[in-house]
Every structure is written in structure tokens, then in C-alpha cells.
Image (cartoon, rainbow, N blue to C red):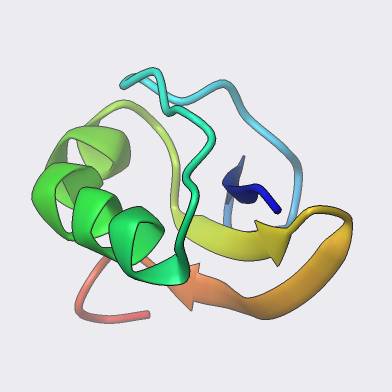
Length: 68
């Protein structure tokens, strides 16, 4: 199983992340990574993220800014 993030603008449009992600083997690894790089992603143009396990949406969109 692979855990991946989708990076979006506030309107749900997918964007390329400013920090290249990997495929994670656990949800915890994916969440730890987003916790480390969310400021860089926000500065690079992503407003929100969605977490997937393979093709299944787990949660999101989750805003990267405090006002979201």
C-alpha cells in the first residue's frame, strides 16, 4: 500500500508541489512529512492537501494555512 498526497489550490485545482514528495509506506510517515514541509508547500503555491491510500481518499482537503 502506498500513501500519497495531492496538492491543490483553494479551489481544488491540482498543483505541482514545491517540495517533491515520495510514496510513503504508512499513514504516519506521510503525516510526519507534511508536518515538516507544509510551510514550504504553502509558500510554493499549494493551499491544501488531500491524503490517499492507493486510490482511496482518506481525508482532505486539509488547508495548509491557519485561516483555512
